[in-house]
Image 1 (tube, rainbow, N blue to C red):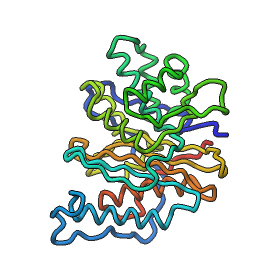
Image 2: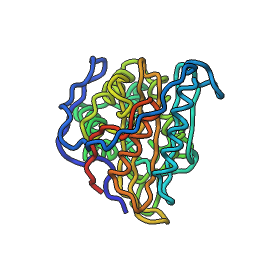
Image 3: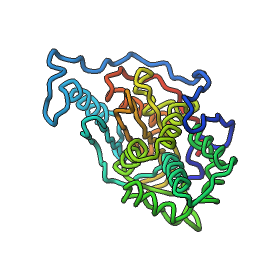
Image 4: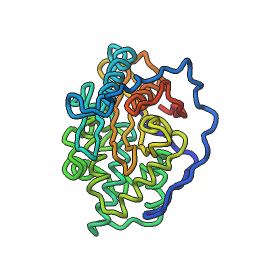
Length: 313
């Protein structure tokens, strides 16, 4: 049974308050795995800007093909990797993998907690005290467990999960009984389509001040979350909320590595990746795989340079 779902208690890296210009975090520390022989993504052809099947550019279609080929090589026989990539400018989405299969959310659900608290505050139904705001900062920035637990005890429960389904459009999200006596944020499953819907809500439907806060928070995450969507590269100004946990399913104990976020000018691209690893795989395998998938989506070489999260499950 899993007993933690993010970076866990530790130093808090505060993020900026709503309407602030950005968040400054410490430079990347040791822990970035030196890449082996780089694999360059498919080169763009002369017709890269032309529209191919499905309305995507031919260059982007090549990137999708590269993701499929990569996934088929690295995902173990009992693993499940699913991706939703959305161009918010055109409204098109690309999917691969078992996108309707529920998997453990790990700490990606913390983004839903934050978005829900902000919406409830905006509606005048709750008041967020200074400590609550501090806890939300820590929850998003370093995936702080203790901060998340405090918010859950004060505001969470099954009614909050019901709002996730209704407000964010996450019909597959559900509490998994058997691990705790009552609904708990750490024992929740959803689909990658649910996470994509959550990202769409954050970027398209939150109040302007709340959106600015969430975007700045996800762009300024602590080093333990600089993987996954972060691998889109600095030029894309990515932001993400990641989740990693050691879980139990009928096929065995296994790691989970998920990432949800955005990249591109004006947060043009929304990305959701869920990876329920084969029991034989490690957390490092998961973080690298999710990051490489994102790197390939944005035409960057792999292995992607990342900071690995610390196992805490």
